[in-house]
Length: 319
Image 1 (tube, rainbow, N blue to C red):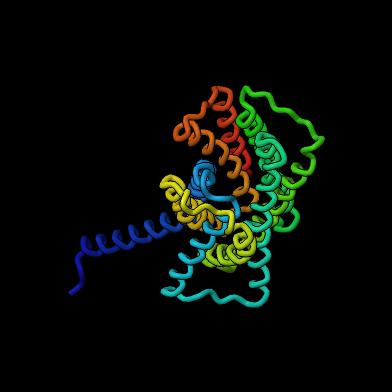
Image 2 (image 1 turned 90 degrees about the horizontal axis):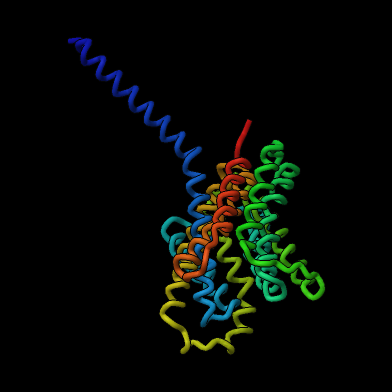
């Protein structure tokens, strides 16, 4: 007995609905999720500066970095015991080791050392040039296309960064004794740029979980000698509850979640587009410091944050 025309219509409608839902889900995964992942990474990293400030009250810098990535490595190792350990060819092992060497290896070393030798506002302005270098290298090595409007967006976001970190305070640009610190910060910019380009290349063939986990393992190995050297100076009895909670945040959110979201986004969108979102980190940091640390946020700085967001939007526009 043949089904009635009504039943056939319902069946065809159910099939059409399922096909439509599949298309919508695919569209969300290909367009929406990568940008949500970047937004989450920016928020996690923006808040990490406040958490680091709290943790560093009782934990030395090299020890904090080692524990941060060491605990993250243990977490990823526990995940791999259930899902299976990553299998990479010799060429990819070399790439992941180099990636980890540049960030968090050299990046954290240059940034921390340079920050101790130069002013924080100047450091923020220099670090904000990362998207410019990424955009240039992505065009050269990844063959990504960029328009003048994209470059204009980067420029606008840099202006916003300058207003945000400067605010109504006076910034002194004396390059005498601070020159070496400035050079080290530029070294951090180059290290971060190479990391972003390499992570984009690895992301085409490997999952974000694999890249993030191995990155944490290699970072732990890199910072182990520094931790051994600094260990006798650590006053473990002086650790506070606030520092421990800040450390937990740095491990789970600022390291595991943030790097996973970032590496995932690099597998879906252009490296030059993703890197511009890094200029939103100072916005998050300024707001978090205002709310959590009771630091002032001037109207001028709010305007700078608005320019940063506008620049991010312009840099991601396509023809």
